[in-house]
Amino acid sequence: QGVPVHPDRSQPEKTLIDQVRKYINERDKSSGIFSKFQPELCHRLDRNTGGLVIIAKNQESLDIMLEKLEKREVKKYYLCVVKGKMEKPQAMLKAWLWKDAAKSRVYIYDQWKTGSLEILTGYKEIEYNPEKDISLLEVELITGRTHQIRAHLAYAGHPIIGDGKYGKNKLNNLFGIKQQALWAYKIRFSFSKGNTPLDYLNNMEFVAYPDAIKKFGFH
Image (cartoon, rainbow, N blue to C red; front, side, top):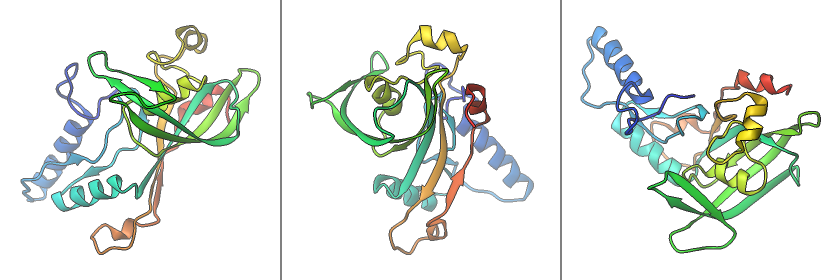
């Protein structure tokens, strides 16, 4: 969290993919292995979102994983802490997202408008803290648009704690949080039948539970 996954205007180097490439190259060099392929990101995370990222170490794996992601055969789940109690314990939120690239910001609408894309965000309430009036949610990202989870939940009236762009600064200051309480904590592979070197991943699940959640009083 806080480290961009790939170079951008504000940080052209020492990103996550830079660190991975350096590690792989040094490891392979010491083993006498030479590969022209440089590890590549299969998907991205916002700079201030923590958690799991899939990185391919060869072209075949990259091609397969990109296809699986496009077909939604890779399920990505997030944990987040939001303001208030959700109206339903579990639901699928649907809206339209329009991106303003110049402002690096997105806007959410109930109906389609020119240039907007449909978004689907599933959530399940895990725990509610009545004393602090905050909820811990598991979110499944169905469509992966820019800032989708942050903007969609804020539009629904439940901004993520610590989110300086779509949240509320007064609320963030109350909790003393400088980074958004959002983590990509689980990836599940649900591949359709095929014959690829990555088929062994089918039905496997990888989980990294963030310790930072304990700061909010959740169990």
